[in-house]
Image (spheres, rainbow, N blue to C red):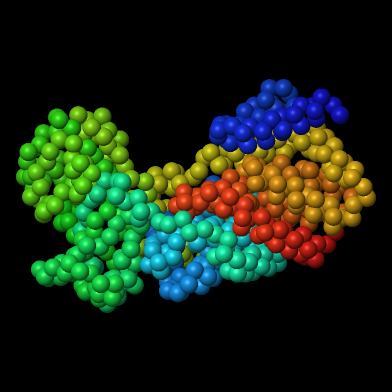
Length: 588
């Protein structure tokens, strides 16, 4: 081998080791590898940076905006409440969860689906009295399997399709992968329904930790007309929230203190909740509720410009000793006080009659710029915005779903390429105000895009230096392999890579090796490329291999061994099915 190939293989091993054993972020590691390839002359700057212009990478960036539009309008939550229902057992709940998750993950990026489903599933689990740990990992696995059904379901598919376009000028259709993806979703989903309840632990819920956080009281009102009128407290999802509980209802001046689950909600009911600051954010995501505090509606802010903020009053706050009503807080700060907490406990009584004291923690509804604007003001000792607390604009949910379906239809019919359809859909989301331009910019996950684009440099170096051909020769050197066995070997190696490094990096690094294997065997490359697609996505054994697995790790209170217990048999089932089906659809 030439020194360039030796250096590339050494760099590849170093990158893999750094990703596994260090805490340095993946984007820095892979960008550093790209820089070394340019400085040493292994790649020209144009070749090293070609990943940043790859159609697959640009499509992923554009789809972030489309997914954010769906999130801002609450479209996925709107669908979830209508499809999940009220099953009586954990197994029944898993069955009801897998189908909508799989379908939605096929039509939009599966990471975005999981991000939007997590709070809905937590709320659903509380209503059904089922541990969230029984549902959140099946949610991630169903999203992974559903994402393999179409080209846009997971970024891995778009990355490999981008490599096929740039290297071999091959374009896969939007639903071409469904011939294997749908059977995998059915087989994997069936496995989860049959065995997930037995294999997954009961980790309890976040409610056990509520006493350790600041406590607030939050008051909301039932909108009229609205979807909650005539429904019971339990049916509305208000009985057991993740971060708070319903204490009383004010119905036209009559106080109902013992709130039964089957109590029917009426127009204008004022509901009083007690809980953590996230309780207010949780209530914002429920369609049919609005803040009962009149000051909130007087804020000079659009709905999508608002968020929840916590502030701690300092010794130089000018209204110390004054009541909330007399302080004119809303006029001075353009923020409405939702609740006051003192020494970790909510302050009882009417909000307007509470007198401010130094050290009080206020929960505010304010502009998204409030935290930056007042962070260094002497009025407040601490200013902290709550993540993901902007209330959804449910009125635009049908429009956002229409844009998504139009994008899928335009791409599937061949009228537009996936990239063109994604561009138009993102523009429509911004133009229709489903999402603002500023939030669209913030929705693009730059570190993920840098990881993917930088990985292309390593993949290109593997091909151009002959390192991939050397690795392929080593794989085939075990003995005479049939194309089917070679396909299984490529799938196994890709699946092993994706469990310890990112799924996209595994796909990009294995692509040139799979190409070299097919060339040395003299067979069609498409089955090997598809095997890389499915294997790179099929990460079930560790929380590190796929982003959705990591997203449910904390909310589900999982341990590393939980993934191994259910992930190993699921990987064997999915991998065996994929290796058997791929050559039947794309012949060697």
